[in-house]
Image (cartoon, rainbow, N blue to C red):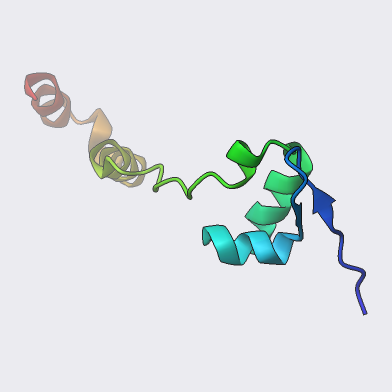
Length: 83
């Protein structure tokens, strides 16, 4: 059986990573990371951030350029210059 670490925050709260994960709605790994990096309750109890790929346009373009070998085609270059 694993030993559960109880962390004490700056305001006196005692919390485990499992409790934090359920309370904030994050993964257990993220909860452990938050508790090891900070004891500030504002940072520990901060709401879950959104997806870092909110603007998928640049991501999609990079994935297309990575797959396509037509990037070196003159017409393709001309098209990208006009966009």
